[in-house]
Image 1 (cartoon, one colour):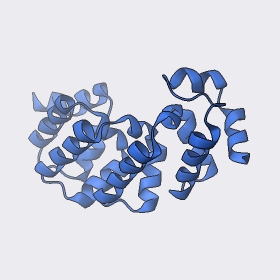
Image 2 (image 1 turned 135 degrees about the vertical axis):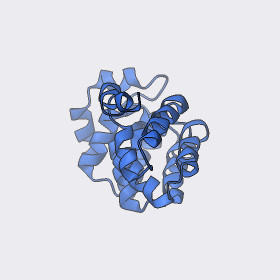
Image 3 (image 1 turned 120 degrees about the horizontal axis):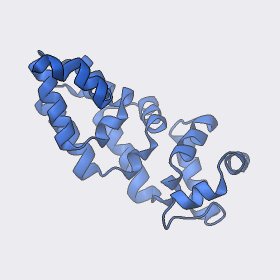
Amino acid sequence: EELLAKLRSRCRYTQLTDDCRNGPHLTDDVDSRIKPTLAWLSELGLSGADIQKVVTREPRIFSRSLENCLQPHAQWLSDMGMDDSQVAQFIVRWPAFFSCSLETKAKPTVQHLRDLGFADGQIVTGLVSFPQLLSYSSQRFLHRMRVLKSQGPLTERSLWNMVLTDAQFTARFERLAE
């Protein structure tokens, strides 16, 4: 109740309803949707402040099914080799992950990284640091990896370079490849 009150005071009601296309309003489904989602985030190890960050950044989390979306996404991260604190850190850094398709975005990106020779531990480290890697289109991802590979062997540092802005990436790497 206390956390819900804090969320109501920190999150503009219109933001929550406008951002949740066809999702629940903050005052709807409190017992059936919002409280279970908040409890689940807390069980994952997120602090109250972290939960506030997550729902402020991604209020649509309340429109996602706990059983069919949130839990399977978190389980996939665990299956990748993330420990509980890494899963929590990943979710706080990129709560939009729950809108990301595991089948068409996340799994293919991880497979690309494996195909390029990255070990699962390196992938986990990279994703915890830069979870938005999973949001890149295959075209953008593969182009950047080809450019980085042309500079020498791919390393964990390559994953860090993947998240540079387009201008930074071009300035740092593509000019060197020409």
